[in-house]
Picture 1 (cartoon, helix red, strand yellow):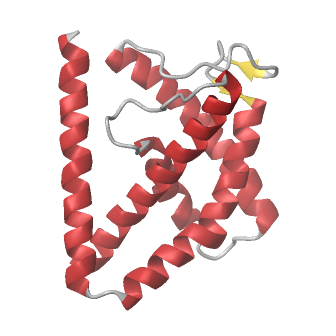
Picture 2 (picture 1 turned 90 degrees about the vertical axis):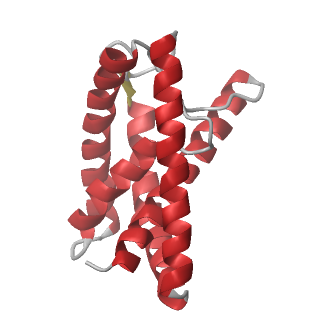
Length: 171
């Protein structure tokens, strides 16, 4: 694997994380009637969306029909959201989200039918639009531009994660 390809994956991870932050911030702000910034990092990135993308993209290289992507992604992302909720609660001693007030929530509000359906829809958008667009732009850009962008992005995300983790532990 080339350095440019690794940097492209970092950029794609970040794009998915930013899209996740926009989605969750917009939805929560609408539901609460006021601006509600989502996530635990200082930057507008929800890394879990990037992780989900890395897990899902290899699964749909050959079989990427709408119904297949929607259904399989919905199941996988819901299972990962549940596992993530328990892991974050164990490590950070915080509950970063709760669907307790929503209809059709399960496992103490850690997952919900609505969020599962939305993850299916967002996964279709990832597979059919975001992934092809990022790779098209990356192919047209120079290796130097892609690698500088990917490296700076990775540095910012890791730095923010370390700072946030340190601040959380210090509380």
